[in-house]
Image (cartoon, rainbow, N blue to C red):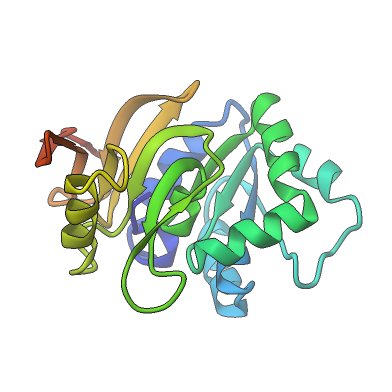
Length: 226
């Protein structure tokens, strides 16, 4: 999700319902991971307030105050993992220190749906632009499970587009996908399956550069019912 969902649109849970429907379980187990926000209590509260109204079994995993020592076992029991936004650099550092990236990969290969918003989309890609270091955007490598680059909040943060465009034109980052707030992309077996949106104005693009010339192609997201 480029943005939106329970964290930004608690009155419109269309993206969250779409996520739940990706599981083949009648009442999927959904774990929220808020590492990027420092496991902010308010973020966890928003998650439970929204997902508590949906047909699922919500839980959360904190790396700052773990509720279990068997993190691998807990993660592999989940049907869906939903990663929150925040500082993507800190997320990746902590995940690797705790081996959470390895546990998530194992769960994914066993059929667990991996998802997220903002930092929770960036982490899965080969590379992305981030303001995790402070003001301004820089390129950073991700886990590399999805090819190319990614940019969330494409319409919600004014510097996202010009900084990404400049990096593409200079060849500092590879082509990828850009999502507005309220837009989401579904990848199946690491290939783009479709794009959806929770509101009619939200956009999704394939973005790149050809001989230094910026190119942007609409991915025509499907509008979901709220």
